Length: 617
Image 1: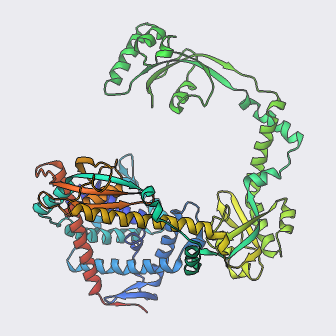
Image 2: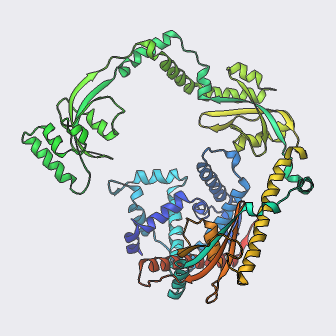
Image 3: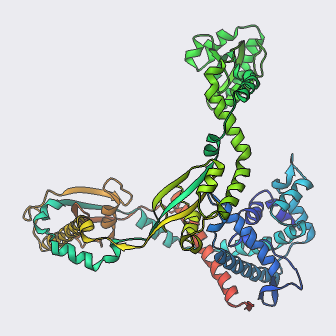
């Protein structure tokens, strides 16, 4: 087994173990922390082995953190704690079942095996050598102790041996693969003709009675949901910066501090650019050798550089400051002394040799030209420093206040208003689920309290209160009559087109021709695959859903939309080509075998779970 570990530590095993421990702390990964805390309260017992409450709560915390990390804007109020606890418990039970099964089969790792595996994992190495400090730090970042990590690896490795053994045993017959390829690569010959909605327009009539009847039968569809009008305060860096006043003295001091930065340095560079590739090093070595032998940089730029514009000027790029060139090019250029030539520099454009021709400094602009910019920067800096303090102060003021006017005045913020917010949300910032949930909570909606201060984005927090509540109400018929009439017209048009298509297909089956039925000429398509996107997915789906026509006959179908119906006549089904020694065949066989192996493993898991003695207090 030890040799097996050594062979796989850099590959599959290492990826599986680290992936299970670090990434997938749900389903399989969130059962990664298992322990043996005897004498502690248990949340479940599996075949006599306890899953402790301490173990369970720890994994619940890790899983909660994992789900928060997947949110664009982490918000603990959006977590379904009951669901997390249920998922964690189910996973821990399944893991314990699999661990016990591995033990029954005699699968285990010795301490020496574990040591060998850990020391060979790249994640714990520095310059190719195992580093204990990195190992301990990584394990602690997972929220685990070293002994727990070792035990988890021991369990996950042996369980993975069972999984791999079963998953790799999946078998699929060549004939099943061939049959699927014949279907997948099948092509069809067919014809189609189209009827527009205008052809049935005289059959489509929507009366006032139809509209009223639809309204009465579908009243739930025409209800305005309950909503609120809200007053709210937004605290953001931008809003806070607007309240910051910068004195003239602060501005002058800041200008003096920034003078060195505002006085830009510009450098005049020349370069020789060649394409990156297998022979780039050889070409660059030739250029460097000829430079060393005394040839001029300009002449070599004209000969070798693929930057034809600068090559005509001997590679001259003119003066430029920072922020103009590729970062790698810029770093190399600003590290040179005047007249010095760089080592080869690789960028997305190719490989460069850079020569520094000249350096010049541009004096800082006068204060009045940059005054507005510097004031904004100073205000932004001060707002950044004060944001956490003001956020805490706003949270306290809003919690204690009966409205938002007092907190807003005290902090120099604006009270804004937004109307028509439903339980599904509204315009920003009420597109944030946590804020909307608080707005419709009993304390806020019925008792008139302010919401908590909710973080709705980076450096942006909101506190709100309900200004007015609007109950759900039925929209009057006159407001929705036009909407209903339009919907009924569309539906009746589709129905009429569908009826017309059925009648036409019945006549075609009876032997009548398209000309006799007054249809547009058939459009013919031969040897078309199911992946044809030109005719649209709906048409191709209908073509390939039709049964194979009898010899000399046709199969008919139709595709109805709001503005037309397409009638399809299937002429021929052409069997797909199958190359049993081809790459497509081999790949599909491997894929199907993998699916079968995974199915068998899931069935094996379920069998063990169904036969386990599981007790939950």
